[in-house]
Image (cartoon, rainbow, N blue to C red):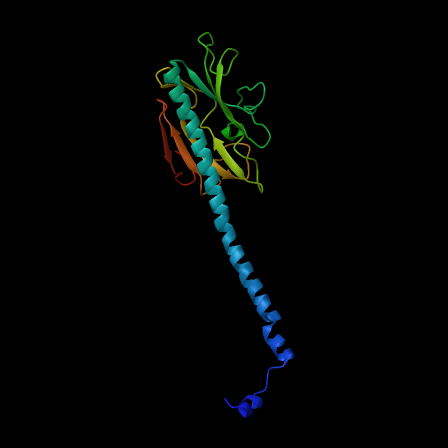
Length: 217
């Protein structure tokens, strides 16, 4: 390009450059905000389902592990081993209790539990002086945003395994692992579509299943 041609091309002014370099317009900004809000609102239910599912799975795995451990300890120690619901399992003087406490309804094992080997001289199922405490479990999480996991027993009582690993005491049936706003008693219809069932037969064997029509059979 000749010197004359170069001189004929006008250089962009400083004001023009900055007008082009500045960000989006107000309409564009509002559009981005609106789209972001819509995406965030649509993602909330998905995150809630993920949270509920993870809490139910964690509660079921923790409880199942405790029962399997107790059953194993009964055979290893050749003695009776009990697992009872406890509202103060991590306290200095833990005790068995099926009563309601705080936001935990009666029969909701999410309040906590403890496992112990029974002393030969002790005939009771609950934890007594002389029994050996072998595992403690505090509450299964706290209430967050008004919801938490619940672990409903099919009935009252302490679970006891004999020296051969056979269940000889305690509720027989299906434990229901639910999630939602805490309630005072096991609901007729489970609150969450993410709920799970932990079947516990007379021999002490465990099996997992999904509720049918909101009910653990």
